[in-house]
Length: 133
Image (tube, rainbow, N blue to C red; front, top):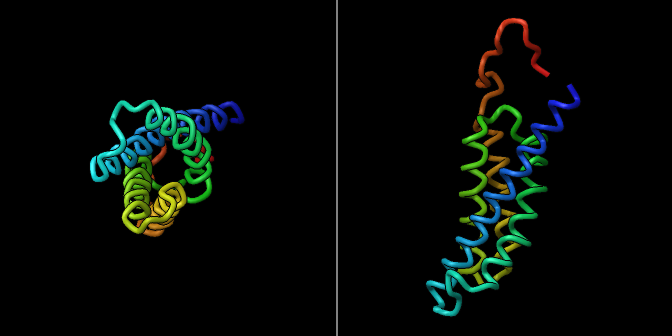
């Protein structure tokens, strides 16, 4: 049981890192398209996305999944929080506030909304003989 929890958490962390990196890169590239300052392949953009956004996704993904979104389908949880993070980051750029903090706020808002919008009984039925937790 403990091994299963650790493997799921590791998988969530890897997914969070990958999606976090992609979303961080997309926010910075979008910013660059509007300002004309940042290039898609600029080493700063790639490094920032990997180091900051990827690491944040690696940590926040599993935390949000276990604490807030246990009954949310995994694809919906990943996609919804990615969209929330992207929207928050873009809003931060538009409002001239820190896009990292606004991206985190968008992530949190999306996670809370997904939890509220997903009924507990919507989780998939378990196979006979398997346990729920």
